[in-house]
Image (cartoon, rainbow, N blue to C red; front, side):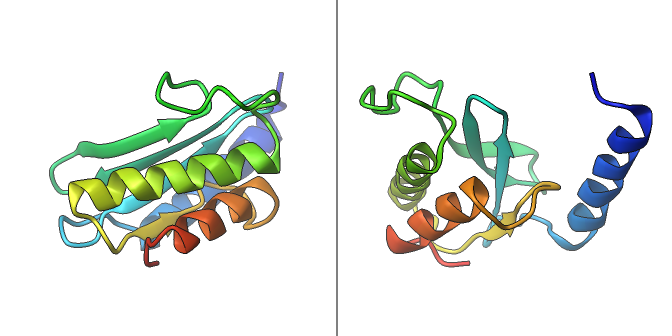
Length: 121
């Protein structure tokens, strides 16, 4: 269980980022959440409060060829998947919400894979 001090610091970082990042219908927000075992990505329109596309290592649409869902390779696969879904819906530009995490490791791998697959941010 996290200490109260650490949890407050994480929330402070999250709110600091969310002050600057806002998803519009023209440029929705790509939000990333990671746990020790899985990684999740959503494309969100904040004005409507709706999720336009989502992908995770736990979803049934994700490839079953991932023996370990909590590593960089899995994050790259999810980045490609969310980019394909976004382009299928007609979204080309997003703003990236790293959601209190450093732009490093799995979060960076997901972002770079989404960029390679055609998403602009």
